[in-house]
Image (tube, rainbow, N blue to C red; front, top):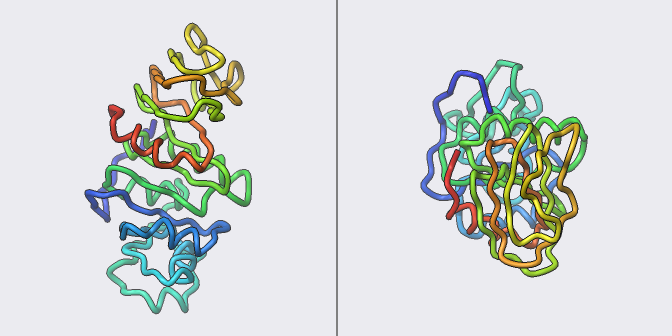
Length: 228
């Protein structure tokens, strides 16, 4: 959980928001995700992906070290939100400044491993900002206190602890009850759905990872789940 002072949001939405990073991203995938007309926040150089997809960001947030000045000059000044401090990543700068029921983040899960680890760190530090990280094959989210999921039998489901967690659960091939999970100990990768999934965790330190095809049931499960 974040120990930094809270910051004021720069974008508010009653609907899910797309957050676009500067990592590898197919413009067609972005256009597909934007079919419902969600607001778009670009993390610094992620604005180039938004423009390449024929879309316009509603806000650009970051330290602006990777945003092409020529592109910046084409954008309205009111949507640019430079954050000079270097104690957080551009992903975290954005996530902490978006007030929305759900953030769908693309362009962060490919490329350098240290960047991906920093994104996971940012998600764990801000569990109150519900965020689904969308990769080329998988989805990741900070597991809420309790969550039920409607997934086909045989679906791969992984749990990876970013902090010490105790869990209970049903509907998985390998039971969770009585296990203590921690990064340097027990982990829960490569489990498998065998029935209705019901997961409970005692703190905001567990990442839930699912195949990308199950974005809709994941979002539905998050909408039913209590918040941290």
